[in-house]
Length: 387
Image (tube, rainbow, N blue to C red; front, side):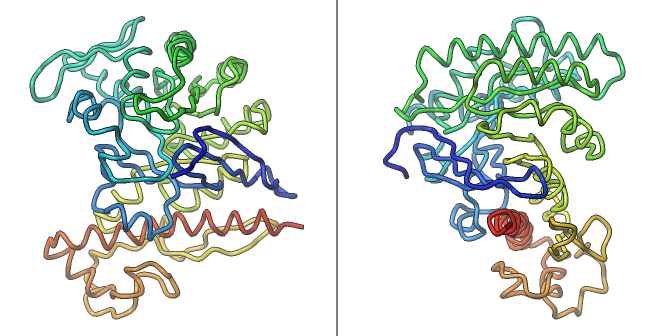
């Protein structure tokens, strides 16, 4: 934990050949260096991995506690009483949380569960059926009780649709909700537990260049602590993600952290967005992939004044469920320094997953998270060592 109850950003080094850079970001709960991958603890825990394992993997900052899920369970009263998400999870480093906007987007596909209007969203609690209202004020209120160091303005996540009127309507709401989020946040910039919080705004605009540019200019004009790039496109469709980043990155001041939401399906995705100048990213995929047998396998090489994740396997991962691993005594990845690779074989992991052992998911997730952090470490080394 830091003695400094502030949020500060320092540009340490910019890469000579790309837009990549290293930032030092200081928060009330410590500092971290970018580029950085944030493991996702949607329901107050990163699935299958405990806090010490996250630390040992090299995690600097996590996404801890999704606002929608925390409202549903355990609820804000309990989080307030226990002193916020850091104490609740026993994670003592920097933490980011989200506004619930993406979950509202997902739930609203079923109007019986969730409805969005100009004021925000109303959804039914999945167990009790109680109606919960999520809007710019209630989202920021909840995030102050969660107590993350970085909180997000409430937004309407934009779907990948060709109808520009739908995207434009969502964009106008997001901008209005951003201003309402800022106004409420400025009444007290501290969490309910006394720590200063940084507020990031979210760029929307879907697949439309003019809307993405307009949204970027609007968000940047609010002079927030950082800028996120969101929408269903980002991370889900990497070709379109690159296109969006090409449209807008030059419009975001270098002094602001840039966060692509949901990027991290595979290690190469991190390398690709950092080349554009992105600093932060999160994704549930590394642990989800691990639980289903997809283990990252590849090597980081320097090429064309940057780095690449090179693999002989599709999507840079092996499927440990395949029967030819049953007698394979090699680690998941030769020379990998994660706890799993240093201690266990492919044969053992194959046995665990086929026998549905609860021990499998932790060992597999440790490896995948380690690889994401390793990629970030090498990118930082490449930027800092660039002459």
